[in-house]
Image 1 (cartoon, rainbow over the protein chains, first blue to last red):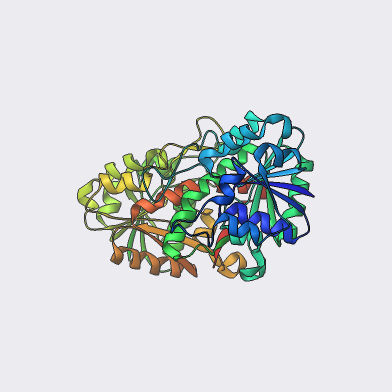
Image 2: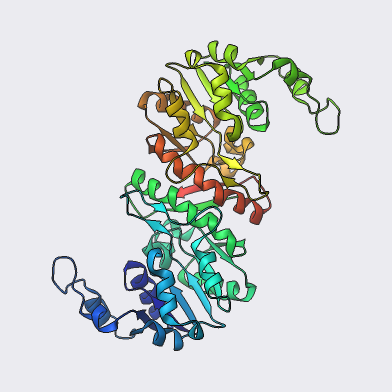
Length: 226
Length: 226
């Protein structure tokens, strides 16, 4: 499948690398490709920078949000929640029409420090805001409930015996996303219902961040035992 | 242990019956004991009523909130979130001072139907509001993340291989609650930290209610796989 991955952070890199490894045709979308490629890491070196990561993944293309979306059948939004709508707006609704958009972003607000609060919740969600802004795109919220490495390689934890969730209005789009999640190694994909059900998974982040603090690791996930 | 259980609903009955079965000295606290005892169920019969339940549990006492609290070493708040502070206020802070209060209530607001929203969240929680209102009581939020029958008999699901959480400011109180949860059959009790961490478990309800809808059962829980 031709997949665009929006976002050059940890989540974007994990999703892009895994999709590339699985044989998909991957383009990372970003606001300014030249700037993303040249960006150094915090210590001023290029080691561990996005450019270095990209050089290590020669099968992955880099393009603007618009060009990446135009070239793709499926778009993964792996930007931070604060910039998600802006990134998708920069892609242009004409390049997202009729396509599947997997939204991984969470509405985390770190302005008051850690743990973050949510800038939308309970009576609305970021997933719904994206679906409303792009009514002709099939938004499927998924993978926003676990760490990047476990999103794409769940089998490294308890042989993959834990759960992920999907929320979305289009059954066919969810079937495609389900298949991709199984390619990643997920064994228990729970379809919660329409896109409004992602209020549940986004609000779960309030527990996730505190469990991470208590456990001292991001390498955990929940299994829905029933 | 002398345990007061506030609330005559499903959660209160489950907790009271289980504590009685385990050999604790249990008093159910309610606003008006005579009214609670006489209350019929929806179809107007006494079968399945609280009075009938009480008759079937001769070891369990019924008293006002104040008398139940006064007679107890540990209080379990199993009222609905909407009335939790009023019930505890009726008990009187003098009867709660220095005691452990296990708060199971969730700030659910059903005024707009199902799924419920939360009337406090994200920057505050019902557990914190209770701790603030009763500063000399050791509030431990626990068991608010699963169905009543699983709170008290976790072993009936997957041999008890799933998780519960605790939030509270007092380590000794949490140790006592931990022991009680193990008596119930819980095998994985995760201490999230101080009482503010119950924002996480209360907000988890947004996922719990939607997972219940998708799974078609309340008989599920999460296991934190790590």
